[in-house]
Length: 147
Image (cartoon, rainbow, N blue to C red; front, side, top):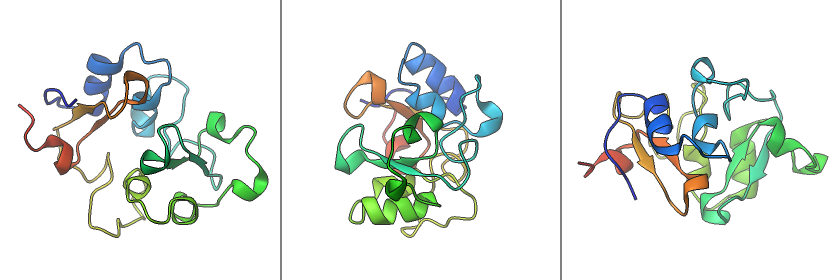
């Protein structure tokens, strides 16, 4: 399910995922927009420490440097960069790479990352499997066709 357009990612998260206990939507905000002490997945997490997250299975797996995602992960399963993590753990799926929010990383497909290079001021709620794993996106593929 994809909903109406919002001017900002924060506005979208607050309107669609205000009671989300998983914090997935809010965790994808840039560091300066985090409404809590929780770091964003890329910029505000633990530097040089990324682990795979399989919350919705392989096809929607991504790499995170949030402390909560790193606790209990074996050292051999922690990578220095999100790109390395994606390439090693999810070698034949694209979703992981699209979640990397790092201005020094160029998407291999030319697809923008969720925050920095998507369509400006056009965020929509994306509910792939359920409410707890929903997030807001400004990727063209999510925004096109939204009322």
